[in-house]
Amino acid sequence: MNKVRKIIKILARKAKGLGRKEKIQEMNRGLTALALVWLRQKRDHGMPLLGFNYDDILSVEKLLKSASVRR
Image 1 (cartoon, rainbow, N blue to C red):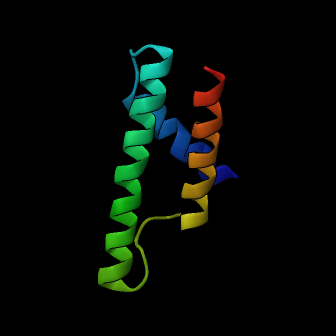
Image 2: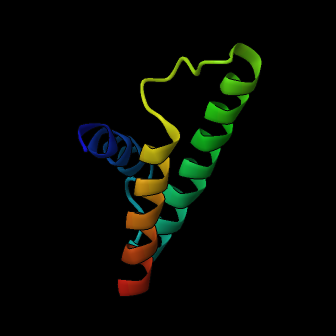
Image 3: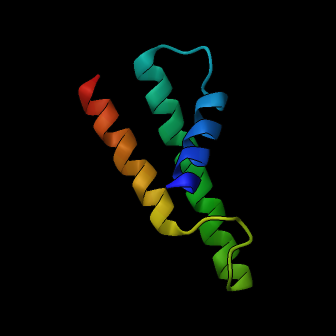
């Protein structure tokens, strides 16, 4: 859960200064880019160099989806 918080904190920092809906959309876009980087590293090196796994990405995606429904 600590890694999920770190990912959300990074995404929120990058989406700073936007409205509520726009912030969620920008965070979702950033999460997609992060997932692509993770998948490329897994493909090229066998083991991703980032400090989290794909389950963490899915957890953040679930949180962002529930937040977008609420907004």
